Every structure is written in structure tokens, then in C-alpha cells.
Length: 166
Image 1 (tube, rainbow, N blue to C red):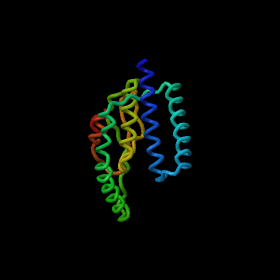
Image 2 (image 1 turned 120 degrees about the vertical axis):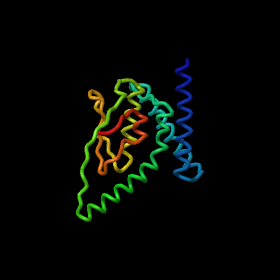
Image 3 (image 1 turned 135 degrees about the horizontal axis):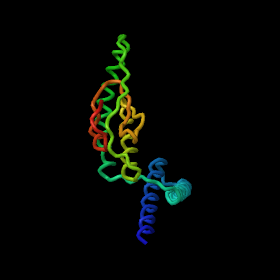
Image 4 (image 1 turned 90 degrees about the vertical axis):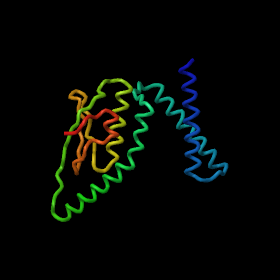
């Protein structure tokens, strides 16, 4: 019964979120727009619930792990400054070193929590323009990433499971 109540709550929240998103995108409250939006929302929610119900998804992040995204705007601004400097130096004839780096990585188990940490670390870290995560090698317990300007592993990525960088 608990699982059913949770699924109903998820469906209601998803339906409301998608409906509000539809109204925000069309920015009108005309009946034909609302009916079309209702159809799109019902189709989307039905598809999402079907996929979640049939696939063995293992993505169980905690709120504090998702909340690490608050650090991202500052990292993007700082990395844009780094990339601009690298570009200016490149135009001046000084090529930037291509740095392929790795750092220790802790969460390597095949459970929902560690899978969520890996997915969030890859997504959040790669958004910033100076760092692209190539992958996480669970066998060697390493996160592999590429940078144009060497900088330490971000606090955000460390909070999700990375150690110091090499």
C-alpha cells in the first residue's frame, strides 16, 4: 500500500509540474491551448510512470547530493574566465596544455545511492566549461576528466565522492 501511495503522489506532483511548465511555455490560458496541454501532460505522465514501473532504475540520490548544484553558477563563471584566458593565450601563440587527469573516486557499488552520486558528479562537473568528465572507472576507483587549465577538483565533485586530483 505504501508503494501505491508513493506512486500516486509522484504522479500528482509530476502532473502539476508539467501542467505549470506547459502554461509557462505557451503563456496563455485559452481553452484550446489548455486542452492540448492536458493531452500532452497526460501522455507524458503515463509514459514516465510506465518507464519507471517497468525498468529497474537505480537512481536514489539524497537531497544534499542534488543540492550540490547551488555551487555550479560560481564554477561556471570562474571557468569561463579560465577559458577566456586560455583562448587569449592561444591567439597569442601559447598553446594550452591538454590535461587528462584522474582523481580517486569512492562510491563504486552497484546500488541506487552510488549510481546517483556518479550520475550527478558527471552531469554537474561537465557543465562547467573547463572540465569534462570522461568517465568513472569503478574497477580502479578513479574519476577521469579533461581540463584546459589545471585546477583542483571542485568541492561539489568532492562532496559527491571524488578525492584530490592528480
